[in-house]
Image (cartoon, rainbow, N blue to C red; front, side, top):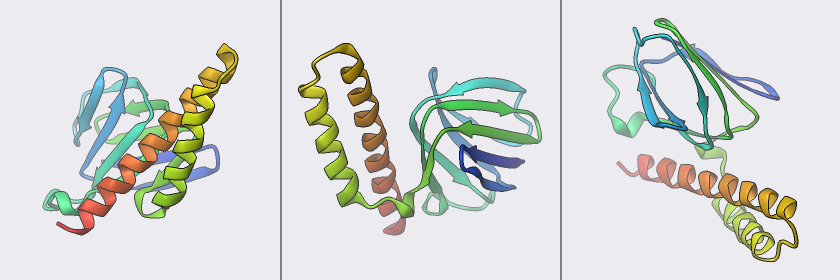
Length: 141
C-alpha cells in the first residue's frame, strides 16, 4: 500500500509500505494492504512502519507524531500531522532537558492556558523520548 506522511513542512514519506501502526484515540491500529476504508484521528505517539512483508521487527522505522488525521483506503494511507520526527533524528539529551523544562512549566502554571500548553509540551517530549528508545532498541536487535 502507498503511505504519504505529510506535515506542515511538506511530505515526509511518500512510498510503498507493507504495514503501518498508528496511534489513535481508540488505541493503536495496524494497517495492512486491503484495509477497510477509514478516517480517524491520530493522537500524539509513535508511528511504526514495516516496509516489506519479510522484514522482522528490527527493521521497523519509528516516527514521533503530533495529533492529526489519518485516511485509509484499501491501497493507500494518508497521515496528516502538524509535526513528525524520525527516531534517528531525535537527540535524547535535548528531549530529556526539554521534558524537564515542560514539567517545571506544568508544575508552576499560574492559569489554565499555561497548564494546557505545558501538558502539550510534556506529551510532545515524552513521545519523542519513547520513539528514540524504540529506535535505539531496534538497532540492538
